[in-house]
Image 1: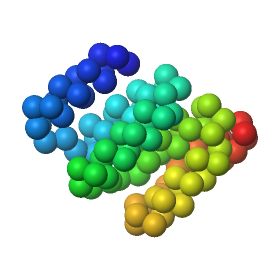
Image 2: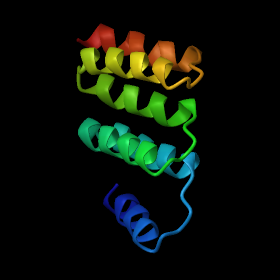
Image 3: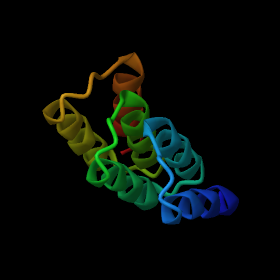
Image 4: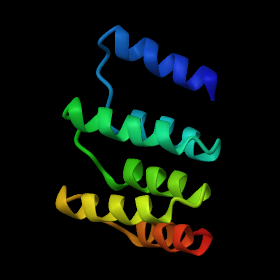
Length: 103
């Protein structure tokens, strides 16, 4: 995970064009390591950099929250996702349901 975050930071510092797939991949790595706050930070960074958001980054962030029992944050993300007009999927609802089951 540290290498992934370092590589991501390097690309960001060099002003490389990062897209939603880059963010989703790093957020997913954070989710798998239980780093839900870092996942939230990265999702916010994607929004600030005007990266067109797709469900993958949101789903990974919701999963990250769910893995550590942050079910309320998972629900908040689902609501924010809807407000942002990002199309949710079965994966989104499964992630939220899983988060609620752990809370």
